[in-house]
Image 1 (cartoon, rainbow, N blue to C red):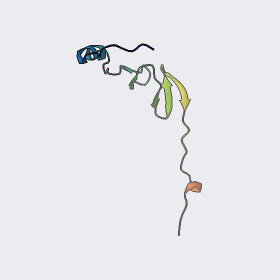
Image 2 (cartoon, one colour; image 1 turned 30 degrees about the horizontal axis):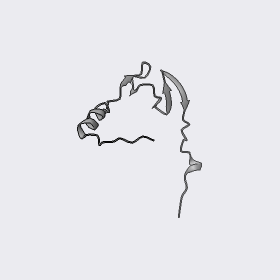
Image 3 (cartoon, rainbow, N blue to C red; image 1 turned 90 degrees about the vertical axis):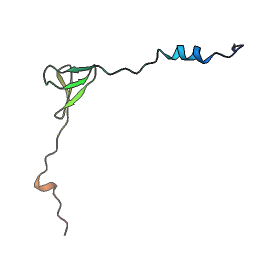
Image 4 (cartoon, rainbow, N blue to C red; image 1 turned 30 degrees about the vertical axis):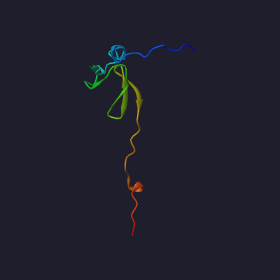
Length: 73
């Protein structure tokens, strides 16, 4: 495997690294719910997983009934 004969300068390395930049994620507003979310990602709204304005998955919410409460004496 070839190796460089001479050392690369710091300036040369810095020029190469200038192309690696931090970018801000693009946000969109959902047409059906009006929620702000990351583009091309599913997002949760009121226990529903939404993608492109459609419900993909619903999370079941367990209701607290009288049978679920334990009384310790």
